[in-house]
Image 1 (tube, helix red, strand yellow):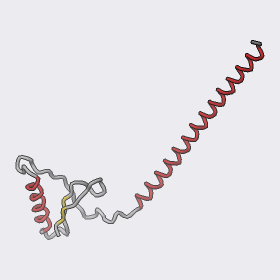
Image 2 (cartoon, rainbow, N blue to C red):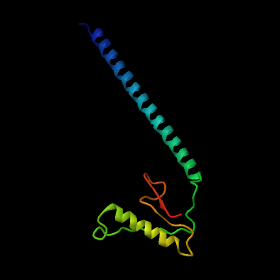
Image 3 (cartoon, rainbow, N blue to C red):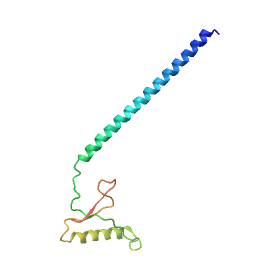
Image 4 (cartoon, rainbow, N blue to C red):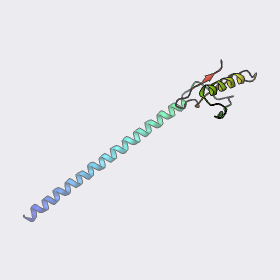
Length: 117
């Protein structure tokens, strides 16, 4: 094979490699822009969420963690009865406007309320 053909094949392979690198670089650049755009949109959504009124306030509230001993309360109905009586007794206090028991803090996944009316 002549040297000119060999040089041409090398140049052609070199051009293919350069084209491949350019395409790879463009794909990375496009992915980076996409990630930056997504991050910006996520931040904007989070800022809007922080400005949203959740419908309650924590002012003048008291919270505490309490776990009943399993040796004293062996089944679930006894535990729920204890908490219901606790809420009722706390609600009867003159200084208290309302009382409730929850397994999760508000806005945590799965939160629920047992409320004394």
